[in-house]
Structures are given as C-alpha cells and as structure tokens.
Length: 129
Image (cartoon, rainbow, N blue to C red; front, side, top):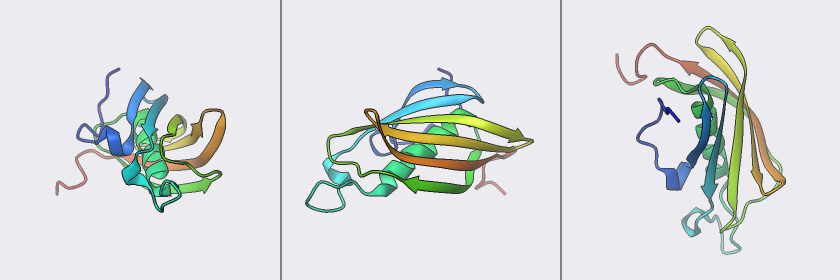
C-alpha cells in the first residue's frame, strides 16, 4: 500500500488502513475502545464511527492534501465497546479536484453507517497560505 495522505493520523482513534487502491477504493478498520464510550452501557460515540468513515474516504482518494468538504451521513445501528468496525470506501465520481466517495461501515455483516463524502484535493496543504 502506498498511503499518501493523513500520515500523522492516530490509528487507534480513527482507524488503520487494510487496503488502498489509489484514487479508487479503500478499506480501514477500527476497534471500539473503552475510551470511546459515550455512557456506562458501552455505547460508542458516533464521532468515532464517522471518523473511521472519513478516514476511509481520504484513503480512497489518497491525495497528500485531500480534505473533507461535506458529508451526507446516516447512522444505522449502534456500536459497542470491543466491536471492530470495518469501513469500505469507493470513489464514485471525480470532477477535477472534487471527489465523491461512498462509505459503508460494518460490524461483522451488520451495516452500522453509510454516507457520501465530498472531498477536495488541494494544490497545497490547507493550513499553508
């Protein structure tokens, strides 16, 4: 795998790459840790699921300066401590620097999240002026 984006990301908080096909698709995984729990029942805060989906979208585009512009997201089922989420991202449309990426997140066979992410591949890092 030649990963060209998000080199400083924490794989324990946002997920780890499993497979990347540059500009086409990616797969990433994240295990739900105790620190991600939103309450004492073991429910994981949805932000971690969203973060995994976002990271998978960035990996699918795999440009050094890719950023998220917008997302349409739907949470389908809860995630609990100890479960492993797997995100599947596929670039469905590219128009210049803009890419649309479909992302599904599963726990086993159960889909827990689905979304469409609009990503932009910038000429330079977003923090550089």
